[in-house]
Length: 82
Image 1 (cartoon, rainbow, N blue to C red):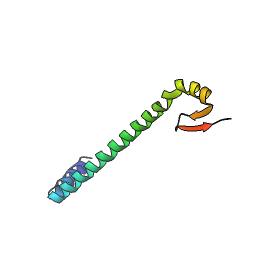
Image 2: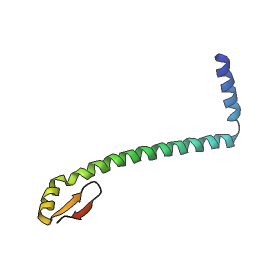
Image 3: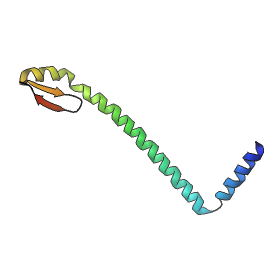
Image 4: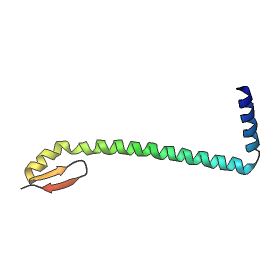
């Protein structure tokens, strides 16, 4: 096991001797961080959108009764009902 760790550390040192290899690794790390943050923000936006859909429930019934329409709060569609 210690032989494997020693060989791994030597190979990493050899890889990082040249500046272009360091630059490539930094770019890969930055891209990975950006992807993780985009996925995190996307999941937060989905949760916020689900909460926003429920804010019209109190007004929904009175508007439906007055104007005789059906309101879909999930996507904001308004359908007339006769």
